[in-house]
Image (cartoon, rainbow, N blue to C red; front, side):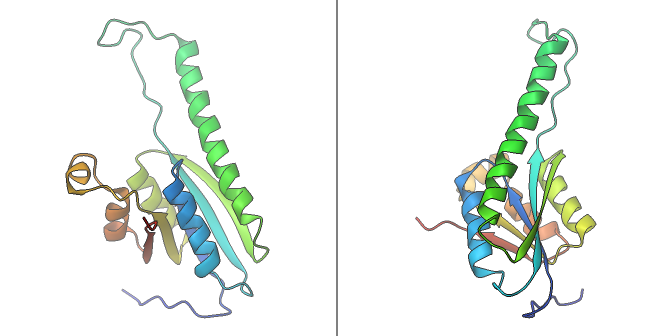
Length: 163
């Protein structure tokens, strides 16, 4: 595997994985303030991984009937949430005139969406926040940042918020 070195004056493709959490917004701000030199032109891809809208049969296991309107409403909410999070992150990026911003919202498991997108866009670095879950919680729900650190095909910077 080739070593990646960030050289001043070189264009970089940075993927910032964001979600609704303050940790991901903090990681984005930290990245913009500390990782990207002010005089370099760079591209920042704001990536939001939308959970897949569940598909239910007309009658679920509990015996409740789901109408098409309910399913459409759930999907609409998911899309609106993604747009809201991406817009918030884009507004933060507007304070930096040396970057080009691309927004992407993809559906699927966050681990797979992030690693696939990093590979597809040819990212030089992936930046993501850490929720700081303890051992027990990570054992049950897993850690997206841990998975990406082991599987992404580029360097991964996990930014942890100071307590």
